[in-house]
Length: 130
Image 1 (cartoon, one colour):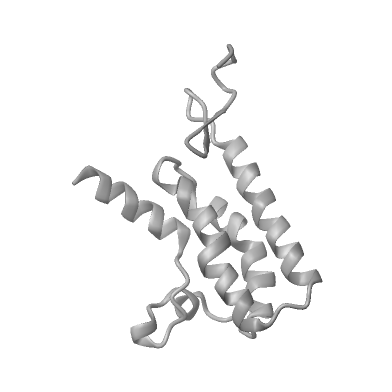
Image 2 (tube, helix red, strand yellow; image 1 turned 45 degrees about the vertical axis):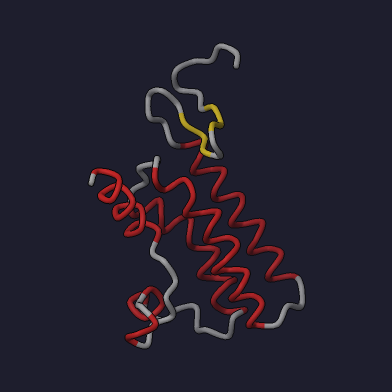
């Protein structure tokens, strides 16, 4: 590991972090991963059930992994999720403008069970304290 400016992030355990707490590199990385995934989903012929499977078990796990150690605002989380809502929901035969309470609601209450990354990051942080 070489010397870096304190604002420069270094990838450690799959998360780009800097000593000063600068999270822009991780934000840009997650946005690029999500946009690449959305582009693949949009441009290929994939059945809706496989798109949903890829969304819930693939890209959402990639997005949720760094949430334990990062502190994104709700606006930044929505910025990360925008391509997922746009491409992932519509290619899964779900209206992309559907109320987020239904999209993120638990399946027991007739929701789709898609994790809200802002809420999940808060839960991870609280869970880590206990």
